[in-house]
Image 1 (tube, one colour):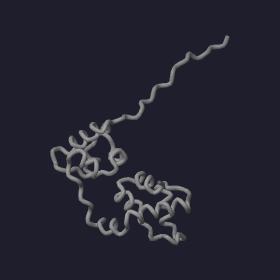
Image 2 (cartoon, helix red, strand yellow):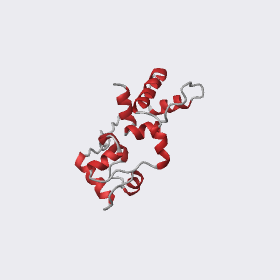
Image 3 (cartoon, helix red, strand yellow):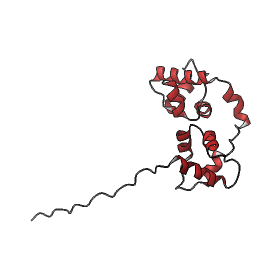
Image 4 (cartoon, one colour):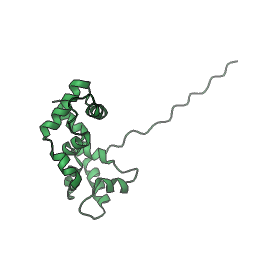
Length: 149
């Protein structure tokens, strides 16, 4: 006599949480705790696991500062040590660097860009770091979107 196992459905995995723009902006205001602005680092320290992530704000609104503006908060001033580094290149140069990387490597992935940029054999090793591009363009995905137009 053969015994068959009873059918037991697999447990359901919860789907991603989808936030409205208003929910995101209200969370920023709440986590600012009455202060006029909210640095990204402070946001990450204050947020709970149920709160949206900083990268979500950057993807949804284009940049951390744009998120703050939409929430009615003051924007965060760029750290002084980054000011020279991020103004060394024009927006066109940032986009051109991503395009050259794509031509050489076939990819616009951040890891591929950094590997290409730091490769000692790369004759264009003077291209901007990915962190500069992300800061100036608001996010890596926005920068690659503009580069691939």
